[in-house]
Image (cartoon, rainbow over all chains, first blue to last red; front, top):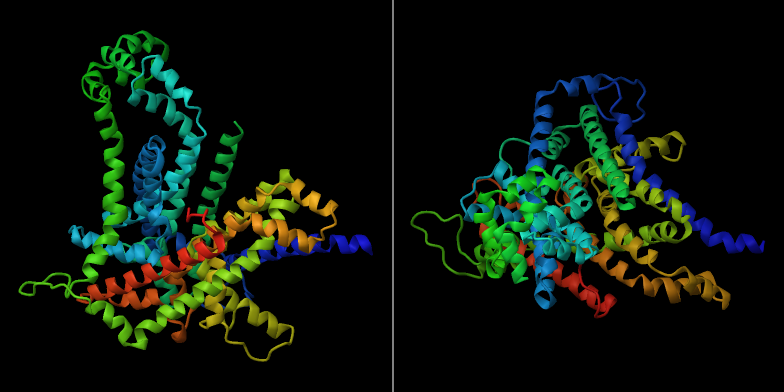
Length: 264
Length: 328
């Protein structure tokens, strides 16, 4: 009796954890299961199962174009955000005292501004610099959103770097650019890799910035949004499942990658 | 420092080490072109600082502050985009419009109610989960237990919102299940209600609560809890006197993050909410559709939302977090 009482909090916490796991997975599992329903509307029970929605989606031109467009935007975003983010982190790491803190706070600003406000302010901003809505505007918006995350990841790694590594390189005759590319950048490798994958996921998932900055070419979330609003069929489930599997694989790889480099 | 630079400029040392590292990068750095351009530039301390600082500072000023500044500027103009023959004048009228109609200020109040309640519910739901992973799970299994919770969040905002529809629709899994076990005769309308919106919000944002809470609880030394137990403190006392105060930083940053994220969510209320749950982002977006000339009003509304949300988060951090905590 006594041990049962002592174990009660532990049992309750275990149940809370598994309950939460169920809560997180149930809707997504239902969403995936519905993609196999052999009917033109979404309703449970599923009854008749089919693979046809996937065959249809795989040949759907708008879907494939949206995939390609999302990948293009994510690639450009990742490239820009990584370069700028690492550059900002390098500056913050060498700036001491109050100014370093101010720089860090400003570098993180886009991460705390609510998404809608960020999207609206960027929409206004691109019109004041006469940039049209479309690919360049989306990439700009996604990059602004992703930079703080790269900064934080790169800075964490930079702070753990032994200062004498760069000093040694300098003693051996490397100037600061050479020291950066030959010593600091390789040391930052894992943080940059993790940051890049994070940028890809942020960009592919982003809806609100794309909605206000985009032109006529839809990215994946825009396409799915339009389909959900236009009348639902299991076709959307098949699309969403495919996207989910790909982003999930990317995320899992990121986890594997950062863990492997951490243990090294 | 000075002697290093002289060496690098002269190229004496790199030339000696070059054969050992014959990568393309080394070839580039040892080339005469590099030595006379970038290499010569960075040998001077001032130009080196300018090279390091120029891009980050220009980017931060232009891209992090610029959009907010432009939004503020346009919110104070009488008309924008600028048309011929109508010179914009400075005005506060766009802000006054907000207070003139319940149609405008009610959605903001509603946004605050939803964001605050979603934050509170998320804290209550996620805290035990974070505690379980950080303190009960064996250390070697901890990252797997955490990973299991991260996986669903790799699906984007839209896919997760869409998946809630599968659960809550009239012919969704929950209603069909309840009908099949005989608890209801006709479906309960769950979707497009305040309930589905709240449910979806919590589903969307709980990760932002999980990570700060986990890292805060993880840092609490286990021997503190053991010592308290040895001295006779029960589970509840240990929680109230040790765990809760020591995880305060995690609570503060988790709640602020969740609050600021959920107040700015745009797609979820549009897909899961109904006519009675119009939130402020949808109100703002109305001013930017089509060839509207209402941008200044929308900008003013967005400024009102930004300032009120950041102020709320700051007050919360002050009260709960004390002096030491900052947003990031």
